[in-house]
Image: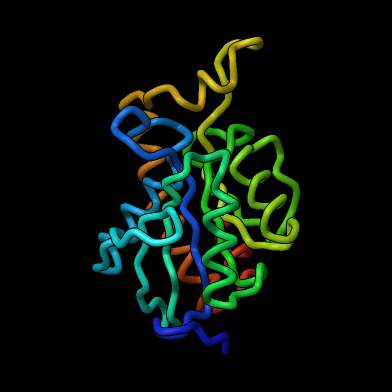
Length: 196
């Protein structure tokens, strides 16, 4: 067990990637934040305490104390906020779960990975660069790729979801909550077998 300071010890950190502010609500890049919203509803917690440049909550999931965080630093600087939390709670990278969007998968598809490269995702790239490498589990939510070759990727991920896309990604966020719980309770191999 890893011991925090004044807060109760936590065994896991879950980071939901997105961009803060009304401008970015219901955009593809905020699939992680959409999953945080589903966690709040399903586990009756509020991710609202400001700590480590993030909105946070400490809650119990599947019998384990978990630190939930939505970095408010913007996507590309998420690693600094996570590094502070890891240091404070003494949680190793292998016990950090990152939830993010993925343009390489169709909208609504879910994939769990034990580790891996950033795959062009700047939030993951910042975490890998600042937090000690690629060895952290991640849950990826497909948001689809631009409809035409040559479309600007930044414009695509920051654009608003259509009604159909929003439903697909909201449904995927609900499944991601169950996948997250399964990683914590039964291990990543079981979760990968169930959801990939």
